[in-house]
Image (cartoon, rainbow, N blue to C red):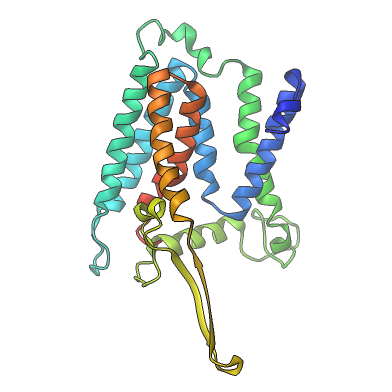
Length: 271
């Protein structure tokens, strides 16, 4: 907000977007779930035009169609049941998106005229700037964060850095994803995504007894303030309602970011 209040003109706004791109890259380098926020920002940008809204809706349907089959499958070992809550979330998101598109004015034949397809990207310069902010810069920062790992003899891409013959970043990323995607062993410290806004079950990270310290024990757990969590969920619901009734672009953007950072966790079987 401090930077936004001081950005002046096209140059200032462009520099602010570039700073945002670097910040998104740092978030992505810290944790992959930053992709949820990046996707939400892309969705907000697409929703400015009829063609963009059509692309956003098609993208959400495509993502749901890709993620639902493995989410609803039953493992051969019987250690995983169909993720029915994710099915409900996916249907709710699609229905809500269709309703929001209609609320924004729908997509009539005039809006979807092929001669107006350029409206989806506003202008070439705008598309390039948004692409740099949401894709190029975050990816570049993410790759740069792995340079210390490459210095150990590994490769960012096949053949680079020169002389390195270790595993590639693509191989490392694939193995990390497969590990988390196939891990099915339950543990008592897990906390389901739907319980987070109510702070029903904090995530337990560590517990140890220290006999040498007189029987003291230490514990680390992730628990939020119950009042702020419950009021936060109520505030998000109010925000969504106000965005709907007032047709407020700003309020709708805030609501999209909130739910985009939370609801994708419904796909995660083990958290």
